[in-house]
Amino acid sequence: MDKPTIPTPHPQDKGNTLKSPPQGRLEDIYQLVGPHLDAFESTYRELLRPVSNNYIRLLTDHVSTYQGKRLRPILVLLAGAATGELGSDHAQIACAVEAMHVATLVHDDVLDEADMRRRHETVNAKWGNEVSVLLGDYLFSRSFVQCSQLGRAEVSTRFSQISTQVCEGELLQIAERNNAELDETRYLRIIELKTASLTAFACEVGAHLSDARPEVCEAMYSFGRHIGIAFQIADDCLDIVGEEKLAGKSLGTDLQKGKVTLPLIRLLSIAPPKVTQQVAKIISSGTGHADRARVESWVREFGCVEHAEDRAAEHVAAAKKTLAVLPTNPFRDAMETLADFVIRRSV
Image (cartoon, rainbow, N blue to C red; front, side, top):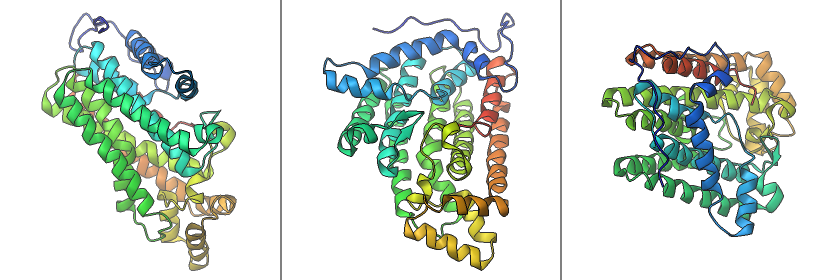
């Protein structure tokens, strides 16, 4: 049964008394869409626990602990509120988006042989790879069921296209493993597909379900694409120079698996031959995790993290420019705040 629509003041409604969230306070963003976020959480719990099978419930209860900042559901809600009114469909599609995202995390942990995710033991560390692969598949299927329940063929089609892009990006990343000659253009294409496409869809579908004009939906897609790229660049930096206790997840897995990310691409392009030769050997040998400290010292010495951070900041700035299509309102302000957050986060 559909949840009742919760009225949201239209952005152009002069009676809108909501105030913009202070810079950097995610809690204020959550409060801004509070009732709708509550509806999302309730629906998401139902999505994760739909069966009477106790074993599957044990697994889905475990992944329910993978509760991050809810970036993608928040983007659905903010984009919807910034362009029109929120309804029950927004919470429904936000659940589908989050389920797909968590499915990719479960699969990624298998590929990376990670043992910690959001300060909890990964599914593969606790139950093994077979269970993890099947659970990820289960969550993918649940996301499609959730999306189909909207009864919106165009949304289901678009969701399917995005899922294909996510998988394509993951496959391209595997194809480029141990490739010390990977360039920035190819790297950006990979992360655009595997990460940014889903954040872009979250923004686009939020606006679409609020009956926004096509050009506004396109702008929202562009906003999500840019912050998704910035998010992944920041995450890739974290894998090299972050601290596991602060990050709450396994780090160094990119190096261990021979994934060449932006800090490494920069290092290989500017460091002297005696360094680049060692880095290339580390990338190709699969000993990256053991050599993480050495790589970290090099990327710091040659300013490679700063270079990557600058690229991420450029995408955040580009994301903010896309918001010019929206009238000034608290939801637009919140989207700007969220864009800044993705490159300031520690997890």
